Image (tube, rainbow over all chains, first blue to last red; front, side):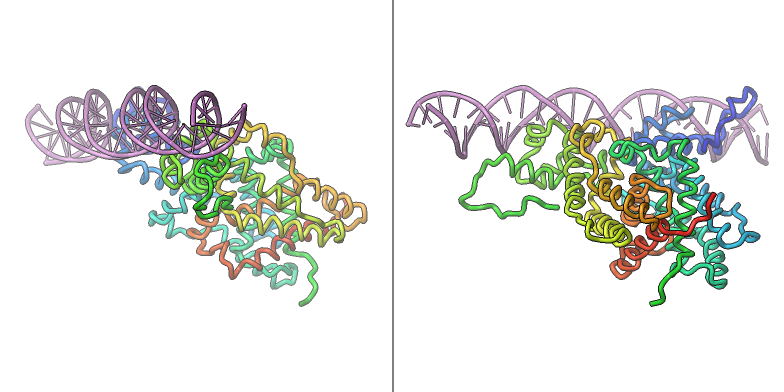
Length: 221
Length: 221
DNA sequence: GAGCTAATGTACGAACCAGTACGTTAGCTA
DNA sequence: TAGCTAACGTACTGGTTCGTACATTAGCTC
């Protein structure tokens, strides 16, 4: 998550736009994820940076645009992970499982991302709408799902009537809920969904669920 | 959602604690759901009430306790809906499907509730922790699931190794995601998950998914 | 109908917070 | 090395926002 972690290099640059911007983004990501958009404090972000509030406005224009940039970067990370995915050598069942597990793992490893998405939804996705970058990008995961689905349906292995977008929603919902609603769920039902001891259980459960759905015997109608 | 909708009764009471409290709670629910905890404005809530800000502090103590009370009421509504559920006369498959559909319908009909839960999770469920009422209550849905699951597993119909809490999480995650992440999902993938035209499709999809998972043929291991 | 209290309204304060005016300097370039 | 500009810091402001001190009244009780 942290892209700035080099210690202050003694002989290094004192002024470095790229590093200052990156540092602001790192801290802003944490602060927005911690407290929500309105709960986040620009002063707090500045204080936890080696620079000042002035620089936030210098580089990003304002709180709103800063949040948008934070979102863009967070979505960029998951997009990258999805691009790494290579399932062309796997059979459809294994391929879907692999994809589901990648999503599962990414959500688990990036709770800040989940929180940012929750926050953005509270605000009606207005920052995504305002971002050219986020509007343009598709989802590598969708392309992968499309190909797997086509192969599975052609071979008659997959019987379900879903398209890639719906299947993506199904997989994401489980992964997202587990992390996003961890606190209320834990408080109300006394079970920590992100307990490492139960991690494999849920990871398997997700794959089983998706595969069962895709391959279930269906009565013709 | 709105529990105060009687027009101002000409001969009615001018001072009515119960009604004032209820009206504040109605408006507060909307305002918190609209803008999040920190985005919500106490002045705005007061302005949209027939009373003043003074009363919010008089009855609820402060913004924090107001939000807690709003949460308590929102959870109370879904608890009530779950209590209405009677599936004892149904076979396990039909019973699970009915329960899933109830959850689906409730989430769809109460987007404010979903938003409040999202917001509460951003804040680490600290208000639930602070509420005696919310800590005490269990979930009627869980009891129902437990009974259905026991019946289904005993008859050998259900093969999956899940307990009630996990199954509840599975069902909730799909219903929750569809409403909570509607905006970002729509903006990124161009599909409105809450489009009425697709409602039946997703409602069926949820049931199919859960049943397929529960009844899937499994290789002994 | 006198008196009491829960219920209500007004006006204000003090802290907070996003954003900016103004001034300074590092480090590149010619 | 002079000069220029991108990069940076300080100090402040204007508006906002939670919360409250103080004043008032409706309506019940005896």
